[in-house]
Image (tube, rainbow, N blue to C red; front, side, top):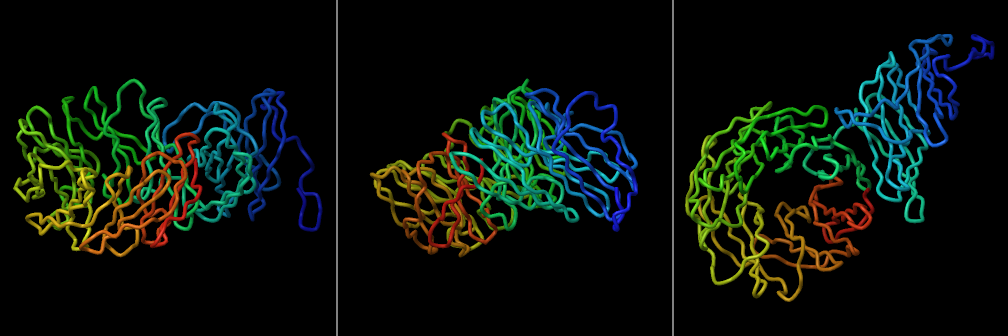
Length: 506
């Protein structure tokens, strides 16, 4: 160490100490705080095919604050430990004025030709606070770190991505400790082969890049069903719940902790829906038991579910197109179902559903793509459906206590319309429809009384389902989809009149 004038403060000494053994060290990174304390991190070569990253905190004049430690002990998936397979290398470090620091490393796992980025956050004493995978690669995509910077609770990472024969440069700002975006505009997926929940989200100002994180790891010894998202604890951000088929136990995770929230009898449950049925700002779960026809609601109190019987539907009837929506406009989610051409609505009264007949539809035709949305912007959800035989769209428009059927236009019946979704794609407050025809995206914009269908852009050969969300927070909803062949996510950002497609992540 040297003073500002170049005078020696501390003579050179071997770093790290003798507890490192005989491994080779390389690629050293050092950051210094205003008080002259500093943190050092480096690669440690365990074998020709295995590297790890070590770090050490130093006080003023180069004194050791804590013993050397290694990051190869494991990384948390936002709260849950999992085995870290493979090498970690190429460390980048950033130090805050208060002494807290972050280290971001490259991780080479078992995916061929793929590397990921891992994040570790530490207290001023060098204790690990949290760690997570912040960028996950698909097949044949590799990351190479370039820069890490930290300011307050935020930090910035810049890196190069190599894949498909081209290099791209990315920079991303992370707000606070690593966590899920969880504002209703994220994509959550479950990988049954690995028993993991993943979330892909974009933060404000990061419209062209998806944050891809492992949310948690689920037990592989049971069968997971009904993986649902919602604001179950009422804190303004979304979480994930899932049910164990064998025991009926509901588990809840917010990305930091995973806890049991209650049980359902391990029976045959139909039409399991997540919505706020009580109007208290917390998401609940409703399900219909197939034998009795009873609707039960797992009502959230913010920390667990309490099961309440809300109503029954005749189990001898065939109920189809069961939908959830606020059909009365009172701020509470209701249920709607169709049987023998009749629409029935189970209206929530906070503690129960009240069943009533709301209208009829033709039984002489086949109905496709039945969807819920507020197509006339009156604060009440409506139901749209398309006649298979001639392509006409009809909207069952809610009047608060009944439906009125209104013809809303049509689509060519000879065309294979796929992935029909609902969203306010032009930002006018009225829900629209979007669909894919081969490699094209089409939108049926609602005028309040009809749909106007126009071409909105190309979508390449991507064949996965379409997902809706306002991914760049501009007030217009966008589309996202994954190329199943490459694992790459693409996003179609709405410009009010078309979708501009961008690479979003993998």
